[in-house]
Image: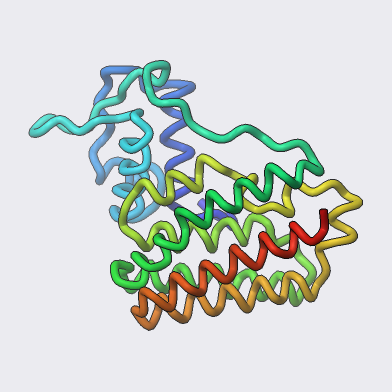
Length: 231
């Protein structure tokens, strides 16, 4: 599995598809972790993270001594957020405020809970964003991947599940019209985003929870201010 989104996201999506579209059906037991590792070509940690997301979504449940079983998707909790039409800036601002309520704390938790591999993943996605700026490549998916890596660093499956439910809506520039994008999204703007990501990553790597929260708050509140000024 390759791509700009994390291995956990890719594995989660693949498992979710197996439940939604078959061959797995309600009542079936998931394959063992070892079997899933072999099927998807990922580590046991990735499998456990993906299963934790599905559990948080109400799609699977563990049964002591028996394994993890598929639940009826029709009975699981509703997932996702409404899609935004291009140019719906007020909705994008509302979503940024919601993200700030969640992601500020996520950054603080990641600073104290992230593993060395999770810390490396955060910095890897930050570096990917910087390289994209140098080459002129698209950055929306890389932006999503960075924030997902921070959420994964909380080691609380509900944080990445929340971001996954937002999808591309989490990044306001993905919902801009072509005219708005041309007017608002400059290289300097994206460079500021990259520097803000760097501040978040540095604080998490240093294990400084308050600094990580402040860096994430500055990043998201800065985005709110920039988009609000454009209205």
